[in-house]
Picture 1 (cartoon, rainbow, N blue to C red):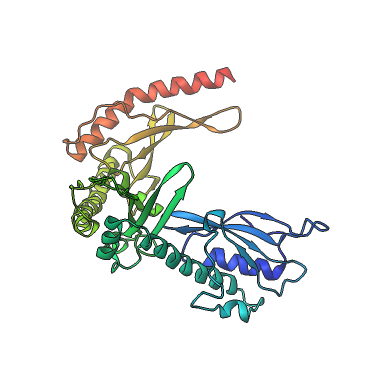
Picture 2 (picture 1 turned 90 degrees about the horizontal axis):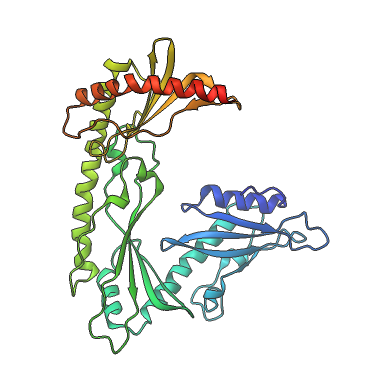
Length: 373
């Protein structure tokens, strides 16, 4: 969300927070605290990633006094979170010597509050009267970057959520030309129901792998097969099995980049050099094709599950436009002869054979579409 409408000093601090924080902090809404001049915005809600979820805090500046530090209003579920109370072991010099002309101040304040919020939630989880949870915490507390939170509500039972960083593989260094600024993050989300005293056999936690979005370029985290959680197992036992399994699957995904690259190269004798191609992850390629005087583009969308899953094709006419002036395209095509056991040259040949007939059908479709308009 743009920071237009904010006083310059406040806008500078918000922009610095959004552009430089290591986490993907977002602004959800802005409003004015001045009923006489509602066009001047000085308050906004920010969503801050925490424990694979977000916490939402209201940042309340005063446009009439832009040199003053903002107030931060926490969510109603965190009414017991008082990071700067007299009982707090730390004071906050960031507020004591607030410098509104320093654009980094808001980011430093939010980071300080988030650090204290991590400690606050960790203490809440540690205070839960559940022997199993207390044991789990004692076995994984040494892991760097782990976050935990206690969630409860009137309509749902208490549960504890853990966000556990998984694997320190430098995936970005394993892929030549990788555009990422650093290795993608992978977490195991572990959700424990808070145990009741009369329950003799605690249920297994709910497990889910979560990754940063860039990993989808070559690896589907949803397709990862999680190792089974055995009765009586704890996270300290489970995590080594998961990391070993995940690392093998990531290495396989890296090797499949070359398999996709060889497939694109096998298309060159059939179509000529591609007009466009994904040179890093080899997930997309576009070729120019023709049937008589009819010319069209063939877009290849190659799954991370290739060659088990065949590429999806879209044909794109170079000569026919809709009434809106948009080139006519075919629907997504995956129903054509395919076997993952074929050599890549045979895959390319069979696709080319399929397109000989499909080009005539597509040309007919393009002509009929233009007649209808």
